[in-house]
Amino acid sequence: MKYSVVFTVMIALLILLSPDARAQEVKVDVKGKVINETNSRANQKTDQAISAAFNKVEEGIAKGAKSIFRKKDKTEGTGEAEGAADETAVAKESTGNDVNQQVSAGETVQEQSTLAWNKYDFVPGDEVIFEDNLQSEENGEFPSRWDLVSGNVEIAELDGEKVIMMRSGQPTIVPYFKDPKEDHLPDIFTVELDLYYPGSGSFDIYLYDRKNQESSSPSGYTDLQVYHGGNELVLGTARSKYPGKAEYIKGWMHISIAYTDGKLKAYMDDTRLINIPRLDFNPKGITLYTYHATNDNLFYVKNVRIAKGGVKYYDRVMQDGKIIVNGIRFDVNKSTLKPESMGPINEIFKLMKDNPDLKFSVEGHTDSQGDDDFNMKLSEERAKTVRNTLIEMGISSDRLTSKGWGESKPISNNASPEDMANNRRVEFVKI
Image 1: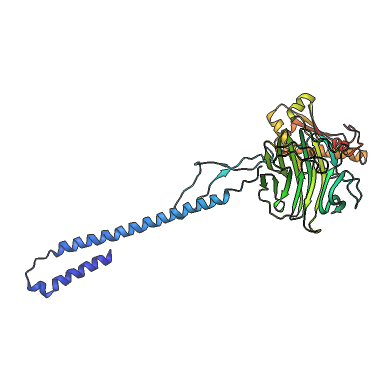
Image 2 (image 1 turned 180 degrees about the horizontal axis):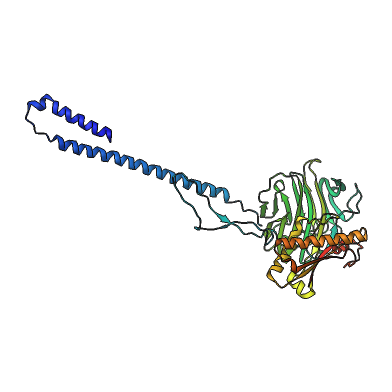
């Protein structure tokens, strides 16, 4: 503005002082020209300033929009894996337009979201039909409860604990049954095992006995693979990674399979990764198979269990007045819960939440191994741990009591590993 006025005044003075202007009698409206020129130039400068300001605002909004889409791209596609327990699930459900946000020049806008996902609903079958905890095995021998299909497999000790070492030659083993060609898996069953993944390679659980049975799958996909560096489960075209778990891990993981009349779910540790509504074949047995490159890259297996499925918890308590659960697991000779125990505990929690008048006596039982007094104390402590866990989850303490029976009330004769597995249990007795 200041420069426009000065320029105008200088022009006016030049006109007035010009000899030609003085020599000729020319009537010039200097005042009017000065005013017009001043207004014109002032308006021009004002328009430029306003235009520049709008450009800044538009640029800021564009940057903000780019931020939104960039952040959205990073969050999309991370839900490959499915999905835990009703009350421990974590989440992300889109809130649509219900987002508190203000956009100004250059400001980043973040989406707000919440997800509800039942990622762990595994409950073991209630009748164990095959159990191998390796307690009676001798180091260096072939595992006595298995049969060899190929390769080399032996018992070893890893960190002081007995394991099945899948040693060399693409080792493949099947559980030993008296009538191996028969279908020894019921219509409802569960399979569990602890697997040491060495950082690379593939570990397969085939859902038929590859030594004694024929595959009945038209697609040819009959094996659940632990794959992709140990953070992924694959069965045919169904595949999913464990959310947030690094690839090429080394260490132990718990693998679980639940089959119910054609529907199959598979879990890694505390998360469901596979959920197939209709399997295209009938599982008849299991085969453990590994492929690895060197002797420094070995798979180890322990705590294999196959169990027959059972009736829903609500129907059990209404029919029998109690729920027998052998899927609540503890560390050896301790009352510390293992992570896989949360499946059945969450089901009990949901049952009690949905039925507020239901009260339970939580009762612990052991097998006959060990000292009687020690087993009694251990069963009491384990029952108390389960009770306290449910109370911490939100069940009122006056709806739960706890008690231990040790080995005094077996439901099997302790003559086999399966019998002992069925005797190691927690019962929820209606009161």
